[in-house]
Structures are given as C-alpha cells and as structure tokens.
Length: 317
Image (cartoon, rainbow, N blue to C red; front, side, top):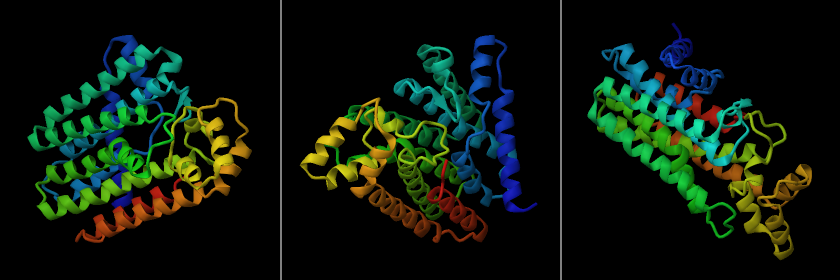
C-alpha cells in the first residue's frame, strides 16, 4: 500500500475509534455526535502517525490510540474556543454553543479532554503523559494570553509569535514528539521532528490569520471574524505598525467593530503591507520547518513532512 493511502487508512481508523466511543446518555451522545460529524484536517493526528511510523515493531493499535489522543485534545480546545469567542459556526456547521448553550460547550469540551487522558493511561507511557500534560497547560496559557491581548494595540510581533506557539505550535510539537517517544526513538530524531512540527504549527496559525482576511477563505467561519472579535492578528498588527496617524485612527475604529465594509477593510490592510508582511513571516516558518525536516534520515518520513509543510503554506481552508 502506498504511503499516502496507508496514512489515510490510519486516519480513518483514528476517526472510527473516536466515533465508536459514544455513551448511552442521550445529551452526551448528541453533543459528541455533532462535534465529530464533520471531518477536520487531522494534521496533528497525521503528524504523530508519521512520527511513529519509523518503528514497525510498535503495534498499529497503540499508534492509532495515540493519534486519537491528539485528535481528542485538539477537538476539546476547539469546542472551548467557540465558547470563549461565542463563535456561531465550526467547520462549516453550527457550533455546540450555538445549538445548545455555553455550559454545554464547556462541559462536553471537558468530557473530551478527560477521554483523551483515559486513552493516555491505556497507552501506558509516562513520558507521553508528561509531555501532553505540559502541552495542554501551555495551550491554556496561550488562550489566556490571547484573551488579555484583545483590542490591545501595544502587543508586539514577538508576543503574537508566543501566542501562536502556545495556541497552535505546541500541540503540533507534542504530537510529533510523543509519536517519536512511543517508538523509543533517539534524541536526535525526537529533536528534529519536534522542531519541524513546532514551526509547522506556527506556520499554520499565521496562515489561519491570513485566511481571516481573504474573501476566498474556506475555513468555515466568516471573513474578518477575528477582527470583529477584537483579536489582533498578524495582518492587522503589521498594517497598524506601518500606518500613519490618520490610518491608525481608522484601524482603531475598525478593530472590534461588528459593522465594517469588508472590501474597504481588506483594501486598507493590504495597502499597508499587512498581508505581504504576514505572508513573508509564513514563508520564514515554512523554511524553518523544511530545514528541520531535511535532518530526518528516513526518506519516506521526510517526504511526508515536506508535503505537510507545502499543504500548510498553500492552504485555503
């Protein structure tokens, strides 16, 4: 079986494991079913499957359960995100908090988190448990730092990078690192694949920020949603830093406003170099991820890593 088809089959098994783990309680079953109704990209699960594929002695069952842990952790963060942001949609369908309540969103997110930790116990690897516990804590830190940065025009690019790492890069990194830990890989392999994944995750977040400023975006949420919520992302911050006093006043009015002219805003951000600078930053992290991937000896694994980086750089959803 070709590598691409093999990985798709493994991801199907991950999805199957998660979906079959329903409970009989109707409310929980309905919530769980709704959340996993749509298929996400599963990049993080794919990362740990790639990372753990080097050692053929590790059972497929363990590798699938490990990838399911990563997917569950990621999904829980999305559900909680929607509550914090009061988002009406997720992956093109109504969010949990939109159909039910914020309380349902918080509690089902907690339920999914706890399911991930049950799986971790089943895998039975202390190093994996430790890494994913720290990663979960870092993700929460990132969310809190971002919450504190709402409408804060004094935020720096470096602070945004920190948020991007904690919110997104950290789970990418942990997915690849724990995949390597699962197969008892050497320190060099663990470091290189972790560095690759961390930079890939930050690249993914930068592109996510850019897609918020695109009318062609297919990410399942309205254009300029982040801007309307007062979130300062890379395109906006670069534009603000490049603007004169009058343009700064205009940008301050736009930030957090629910009523904006999309075309005018996109034109302003673009004219001030917001899109170009953010794209350049994305290319920097693409290069960093490629450099780390090139240090991996396995040609098959390296090829998959390079393909993932290309997908992240050129994504439209």
